[in-house]
Image 1 (cartoon, one colour):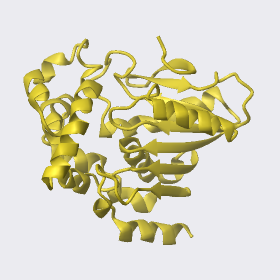
Image 2 (cartoon, one colour; image 1 turned 90 degrees about the vertical axis):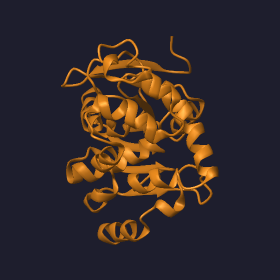
Image 3 (tube, helix red, strand yellow; image 1 turned 180 degrees about the horizontal axis):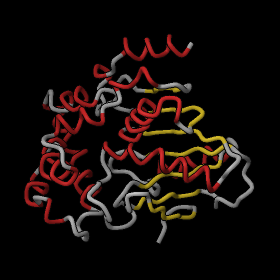
Image 4 (cartoon, one colour; image 1 turned 135 degrees about the vertical axis):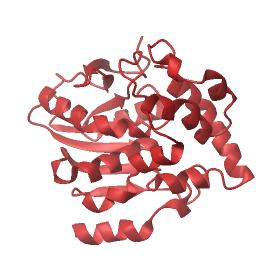
Length: 262
């Protein structure tokens, strides 16, 4: 049932949760020893056309590409943890798994949008223990509370917010709808939500155990740990990105990290 090219590997994590890895070429393929893990954003998974195109491009550059599907995206939830900003906590275990599957490889990370925010949070949390040799983020929110506020700051932003949250409903409900955690969700409020913060209130916070969206953002915010990042990291954002406003990026802090690594 896989759309797109590749092979799906289901991975059970230490807490019983399940994610999947979408290998563009099977792990056994002789594709050199540079592996690139792609972390999709909110509303995307390994079958999304731009993720497939990215893996195809990486392959032409000599990488073995593999994309992560967060909990609940390719199977129903086994644990009360959704695909959301908090999914960064699984990255280290996924990286360890990849290292077991491909013992003599070098691992690199590429995160899109929320996946990029997760990658930065992982790199900051793990510091020198990360298994990534280098990382790139594209259109990542770096300051979660600021990015969330900016998405409610004008009519145009609220419209973008509405568009994003419409997709987010399907993305986040997918794994929970047939799971034993569905009683935690206020489905009516999720369906009526017109902005991400309302989905977080009705769905993410009750399932994940956060008191409110602000605590959820703070608990998963990459910004507070940027100074611990210890591997070369390229942060790419577009000046006219309608979802992640350039004004929410903490330039001074990013520059300080750059000076530290130099």
